[in-house]
Amino acid sequence: MTSAAVSGAAPVRDEDAFDVAAAAAWLRENASGTEGLESEPEVTQFVGGASNLTYLLRYGSGRELVLRRPPSGTKARGAHDMRREHDLQAALAPSFPLVPRMVAYCGDDAVLGSPFYVMERLVGTILRTDVPSDLGLDREGVSALCRNAVDTLVALHDVDLGSSGLGELDRGDGYVRRQVDGWTTRYRTARTPDVGDLEATMAWLAEHRPADLPHVLVHNDFRFDNLVLAADDPTRVVGVLDWELATVGDPLMDLGSALAYWVQADDDPAFLAIRLQPTHTAGMLTRAEVVERYLEARGLDATPERWRFYEVFGAFRLAGIAQQIYYRFHHGQTTNPAYGAFRDVVRFLDRRCTELIAAAP
Figure 1: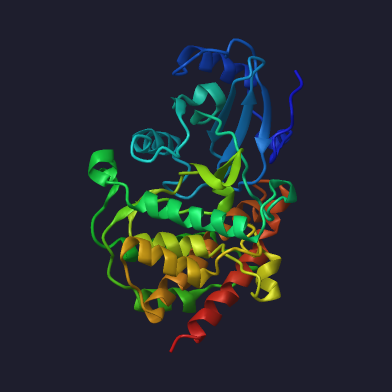
Figure 2: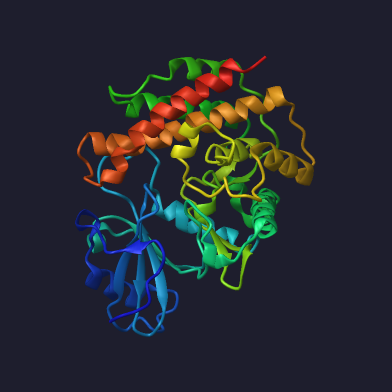
């Protein structure tokens, strides 16, 4: 079976392969809609992510599904919970229609060796490191896209937790403390001898924790390569992907985490060198402008001194995520060379945290 290429999808890596026939047979028996699933699908792997493994299943009927399953190797406690990720999106859909439609969840390890879930593919453009020229976006178009992306986060944070049923994810006051303590433990556990200990940063965060703001549903990985843009209007967001880390908590912690990825055009060359999304493009808002737009839309306030905590936390948390990924490479749990590059990301983020703290009044 031949089909048009999908951006970001590549042949499945040998170490990430699974029994396609078993998955296809299980779906024919368990999918919420089995139309078009009679044959065995063509399978490719999305290469952009570095956490859960994500695959495109393309059937001869034209139906396209996406399968998500955990990686092999040591995993952080509570991470890669396929049931939770599936159920959260299913519950959120009526209140926030930008989530993909869920098709099936499988908790039986006998099928593929691990739990997995399947969803309908959201068709559209996903931005990576640059804005493709064929999208035809000028400076104003890029600015409109950026504003719409920020407004999408605002809309998510405005979801009513009671009506969505997602309020049960709220563990109560102390979210900021739990996040600082949790990422401190995760970093120490995943640290390898070839990166810094970040102990000074962790101590500063513990000392400067603000009180929680009223809790909202937080995505915890909100960035451009998790947004799907409309095929007929690339300034419009039609989907939000990768809900693995979503929970209920402080909204400014979510914004700070999102802006940890936000490299702007006038940043230090070392920061630009590890850029993962096109936030440097002419027309994109600066980090300060994103914060201003978000705070105004949600009627919140944060002084520069208060905001510094969220900025440092975002960079530290990203260092923790990168180190967990690098840990797998360092210990031979994956041979993917892209994972080896995360060591330098951790080293840079260590320096960035130190610089942000040093600039505090």
